[in-house]
Length: 197
Image 1 (cartoon, rainbow, N blue to C red):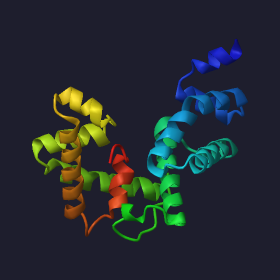
Image 2 (cartoon, one colour):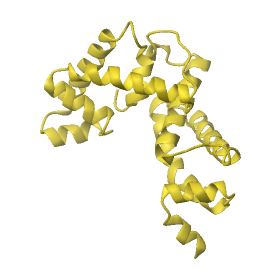
Image 3 (spheres, rainbow, N blue to C red):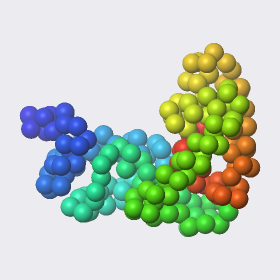
Image 4 (tube, helix red, strand yellow):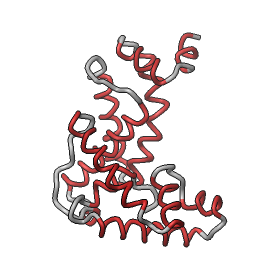
């Protein structure tokens, strides 16, 4: 009965219980987010064992640092950490190097510096997105900000999935060209996600 009550808690409440060493709250968080994070990592790495290790390590760190982590939004935090660990894995193993347009170190996630940089990146990218053709801008935003799949976008806009894919390709190409001297492509991907590239 107690576990059922914990399952009904909000993420904010679960985090507070976690800070109080509540193992049942941790279990609820684990069950709620493990598959989501694994799926997110697998879309990028396509390696079951590596993705499982990445997500397991994220939860280990969530527990071991429960007293010191300042987490405001649990889902956003877990998604950001997952993306960071995936890109760290890609870089360290030299897998899919074509994802990167330049050799730069990834920012340390969830530090003050990272948040400041992320705001600056967000401003620059928002400006770039605003310069895209209207349809291209709409589709890009639906994919990278609303995290809709190609099929979902096609249904919502009553267009062919191939058209959605073409528009996303155009958007990414334009943004990479426009910001080649300012941002490596992986920062663009880190901010907007790797959804249906």
